[in-house]
Image (cartoon, rainbow, N blue to C red; front, side, top):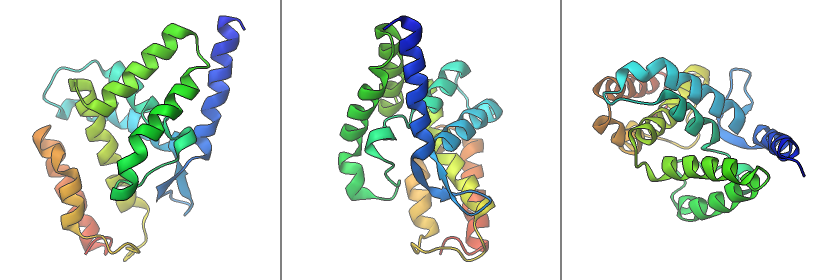
Length: 192
């Protein structure tokens, strides 16, 4: 298979991201898919970069956000509050990302796997920022798209703030935004 044919095969593989359903909804009431989340997160990273105090290679951040959920193509999405599922999700996603990127020419596969692993480990300023954005976008989404008093899981503000607390260490402005989003969600009846 030629280099171009391998790249096309990988692009075709990306179509599967559009079939992975996430926990968040869209404005039309359906559940969003991974591809939609990845796109929204990458664009949000470009918009909010001024609130991150460290120097960033924003292209790298955007690449991380565009590939960070590719491991879910074969592993599926694990909800952030699913503690039992989180115990095995990393290993399953690693196998999945390896399967998908194996379609690419070797050096491109290695590059994408490296970005995915860097995001997962959170061991660079770009990974830290990408993880902040990945955690922030669903808060905005939930507030914007949910109907008043929609809280089927009986989520509390305390649970959400605890899960997002790492953002406090990364950016004062973005942590303040988290607190404001959570408070607005409480007022809307989305969290107890």
